[in-house]
Length: 95
Image (cartoon, rainbow, N blue to C red):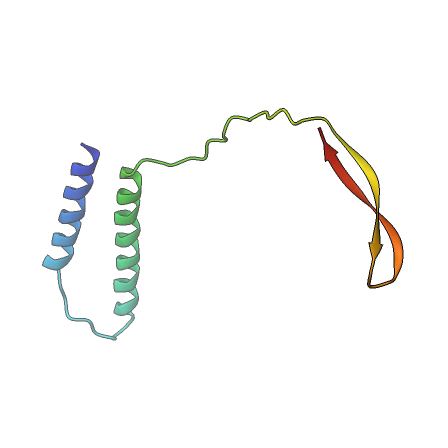
């Protein structure tokens, strides 16, 4: 129902603006009145169209709990060919 009313309002607005067509002249600030009228009409029409659509919102997903296996961190020795020395690094081991 809202969409129908909005559509009819939009058609009436456009028809009304086409019926009152006056040639544009740059005398005495008449252009400013036309621009202001167009902006106000556009804002009203845009507001009517925007309010007819459903509002989308963000819904946070439910938390998911994952049971991870027990892990431990150990130091592992390795040979570094670039430096030519033994080095160690932490390695995570999960059972």
